Image (cartoon, rainbow, N blue to C red; front, side):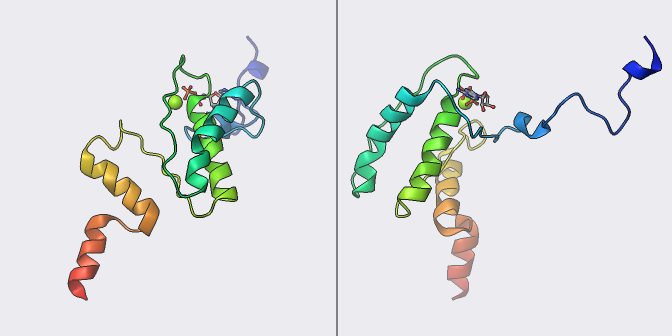
Length: 122
Ligand SMILES: Nc1ncnc2c1ncn2[C@@H]1O[C@H](COP(=O)(O)OP(=O)(O)O)[C@@H](O)[C@H]1O
Ligand SMILES: [Mg+2]
C-alpha cells in the first residue's frame, strides 16, 4: 500500500452520496412499469373523488416497493392536485395518534396539538 491508495479527508469513493439517503428517489426506474400501472389503476378512483383500491406491495428488501409508491405520489401531486398523498412510516409513527398526526400535518401544515392551541386562543 502506498500513500496514493488512501483517500484524503475531502475525497470520497462515491460519485453521488445522495443516492444513499433514505428518501432518495431515482429518476430512471426501470423494470417496474407493470407494477406502476397496477398502482395507477388502483389510484384511478381517487382522481374522481372516490375511494382508491387498497394495495399491498410484497417483495424482498431493496426491490423498489417504497420507490414505486413514492413515484405514484409524485404523479398524483402533479396530475391530481385535489388528492393528497401522505407517506406514513409506522416504524416511526407507531401509535394511532402519531399516524393521524402525520396525516393532519400534511393536510393542514401544523401538528394537531398546535392547531388545538391556536383554536383555544381564538
Ligand atoms: N427498479 C429500480 N430502478 C432503480 N433504482 C431502484 C429500483 N428498485 C430499487 N431501486 C433503488 O433501490 C433502493 C431501495 O429501494 P426501495 O424502494 O427502498 O426498496 P423496498 O421498499 O422494496 O425495500 C432505492 O434507493 C431505490 O432507488
Ligand atoms: Mg421500503
